[in-house]
Picture: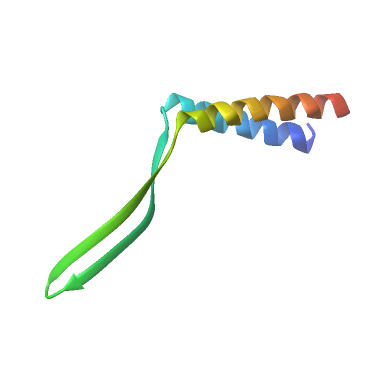
Length: 71
């Protein structure tokens, strides 16, 4: 399989995972400060919406098709 096809399959798998989980939450940054025995923590959270999964699947299908035409 050509590199375009491999990248396409990876995108399709990743897109299906995002769609199956209805989006993916992740922690961007975590800061904590300890003052006088009290710890204060701050987390920035991010979210990958399902639309990104749809875009990844479509892009993966296009790359797989492009990889096949060159072969």
